[in-house]
Length: 376
Image 1: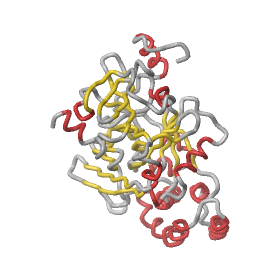
Image 2 (image 1 turned 180 degrees about the vertical axis):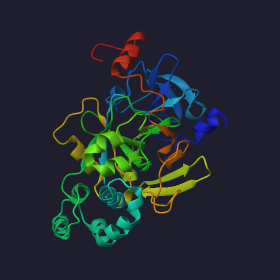
Image 3 (image 1 turned 90 degrees about the vertical axis):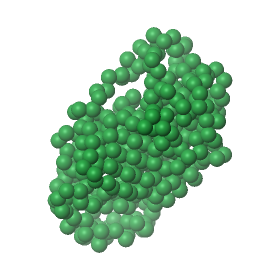
């Protein structure tokens, strides 16, 4: 397959119609791009970073250098964000909420999950799918579950007034489509988390959306929620892309609310798993999750927010009763028609390409290219 054919498979179905932001790797270094009318423009001389380009909305191609049609692009796509903080919301769907409770009660042991799943689903499943987080009904359900000894810290953030929002990855540490994605070498129970990701500017306005994979290490987080950082933030453990689609008259937050996110995992041994997340089943509205992320905080370079996932694979891959876990060589594809396709190959975080360009090296590169201006 040619590079152009591979790129075409990543693009949204209507890529000639929307406006998109991204980054490409040039011979000189990473450059922000703008896609308008299907044409790609290098915007590095307009704004050297995507975070600065976002603050110039609405955008035009004025000052950009045309690179040609998007489906003929000869430069590798990088993660489409740079200086934005990378935030993630957890347990925002009933199914994934119950799986977090199962992990907690299994203490990260996949072999115990099947029995616990049946018991938890029978007692909690119907209630948690119907209750509105933070409502009086949610508080009444909490009291009942406390009395039954079934309360969990995961249920607190699933149906309580405060959402779980955490920092997923350092600035500049995300990887893009077609890159390797890492799971810890000492994890034996893990899975991808296909998600829609919102782009928010410095003023707290939600301006676009993309796709993401918030890799989940079920055995490590299941031992203790205090291990969330070790479970979530590892080398190459966060992918974003392929491009950020900007909101306009043809693509709005309602398209995010109603998106169907498809997942396919193709294993090196011929294994195949398919699943999907329906965003209309999310328990908290995406803009409420943005509001809770902002809280009493400022993000002068903006942020992206993973909205959580419905997907929690339970079908057995190897041993009966142990469910799904990744193998090195798995190819993970996350797709929705309006945002395109995010494709990554699983390796261990130990063996993934090291992250070498931090903020200091990034700005040194921009300075050497003469892209920094006063106030940049």
